[in-house]
Image (cartoon, rainbow, N blue to C red; front, side, top):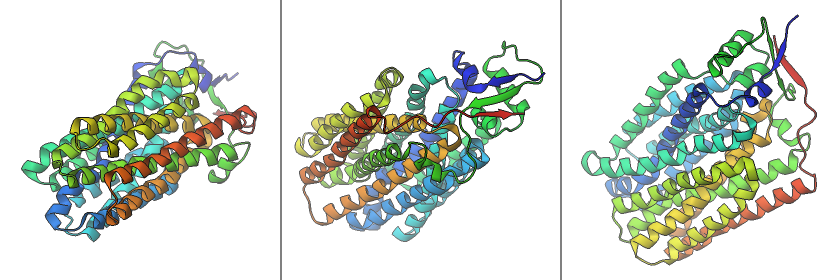
Length: 452
């Protein structure tokens, strides 16, 4: 008689293994390169503007085209993973954005650079949601949010290192070389993923795919585990056929989904407003390109520190209890960037406070979204949350460009920039109240999905 093993329960009953850490590291490396490549354009903007002799606000088209690519990647490419698997989408998107980043080094105009950034960022958008889903599905529930946040620290870390890379490369080799480095690295990582990255074990079980693949992964997680002969594998979750997108609004998820979208929209609006225009605004205020890049890199780096510090609290206290104070800190830090005057050390401190709040807050929001949606729509749910967020990410740089064109002061730009962080805080309170009143409910009763 065949024995059925609940994959989720089996993972929950064990300590994380070196194999699971390997999955986390590979996913973190992928999002680190995505962070580096996504942020490169912000670091390179002052150098390209100077080289091509264009007004700063004209560069808005480059920022926006890339963010439209991210939006399409999140909404259209990321959900493919709920159909064809996380692994294939991650490898394919790495190869795509690496190729188009290399091509960006040869851009000769704002239009050509905009087209190439659109294609590059479309690959970026497709990969991030699946790195989040993959990590969430490989770790025990008692530490799933923490590990997801730790993994996604790769994104701000990569973005921060990108600033240091730009500061080191541009003076000696010019801005095109930054695109070259940002293209070669993901192509190399794509090869490593082909060799070393497994498919999500929960995805395989839920999709009733080859049991031998699941068994092989389980033996790598716990080599000493005594598995029964000819086992069947299951995930005690619902598995509903049909278009995954429509299920985001079903079975008590509608209010939660809308509030999550508000959180992502406003959070990424702030994040991309800051990362896109902070180097340009500081450079225009008289700070050097290197100093402007370092200030922006500190924003991302402090987000990594914040994520590591608050990560352990997520599974103990809940993501929402952590998110609220983070975005209040973000609002204070953003206002301070514009109001501390011309003292660079104070600007650096304010940038760190803003990054601590908004970057680590976004990482925690990623973890909450991954936990909120079940396996069969996790990539879709996280992808659409990130996609709606990318609309905010388009609005942020666009509004920033309008404010610059209208000659808003630094204090006005960053004073207004604090408003989205406060809206996020209100949305988090809304989710808390909705959960407390049982409006946001757990997914429908578990349906056992077995892999034969």
